[in-house]
Image (tube, rainbow, N blue to C red):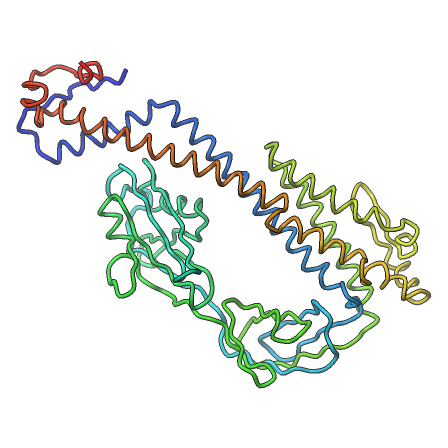
Length: 441
């Protein structure tokens, strides 16, 4: 039973006293609710699963980019950039030749910052809970992110953690004058400006609200903008600093403002380098998958399935052919004998191309398998969607429990302080401890 000692006030209690009592009551009701603790534990478990799936998807995508660069006969093609501002990689069939690239502007994210506070762990506003909505972009492409600021989270550090839990890039850093401020970084691209609204505590509304033309709330410290480059005389823009179709068969990574010439040529010496990089990337992926094991059955099973499926693709290649190229398996990893690979490239160059780069070769099969698993019907997407649905239900249930606690606390606070007591409960000014039994009586 929740007991409130020394709580009864006279009928002349102020609104401030009523608010303070209500806040304390809400926290007490929530602290004593075992169901809320169970929900928090389940949400934490789901957050861990989603984090694991995200890391797994990133590792697979990185390996896919490496494998895709070897498909379609590209094993012996290289792209070399001279000058500054760009790096290039062959990612599809590309004709040999030279291309001019003039990087005029890099893509960047919008950056927002709050006003500074002295103590990043000090409470901001009330502890009753608020909901923040961050909308990135406009129209049909707008993405809305909901951030729930629960009890005990209304500090600068707590709000930053809640934002990160919701998938936003939020950090608390020094303001250069001895204080601390929360810094929020959006996605790159001119269309990715952010708008922020807050439902709940008015102090948080004033501190975090961000709308076009609004001088209050968060301050813009960096504007969102697109990348812009002139390639072979044609102006190209992009929301990020990676151009995948500006030059057929090449992926350009813009790194700085400046002019470059990108040359594409056949280079037999590149075959050995590309095979070595493929082996390294495969082993890195395997190690990453092993390192993602957390003890959670769902996420660990997903990582194990990925590792097994990719390993079976390697096992589907003739062990004799791999051995001729100096490639063997050891505990799931690939082991490369570079001297043997170079000897095979001298004697049988077509064998290496056939196994790795031809249609139906190792690189293409790896790429296709990862495409399927990262796609809408793949293991990762299916598992992540299920976890998100479960997490949303839990958070909705938690919100209802908090709202219920708020309603109970309002009634108890009125009874406890005597506010309106003469109408509902009679005179409650008798100086004695109150309990939930009194309220329910």
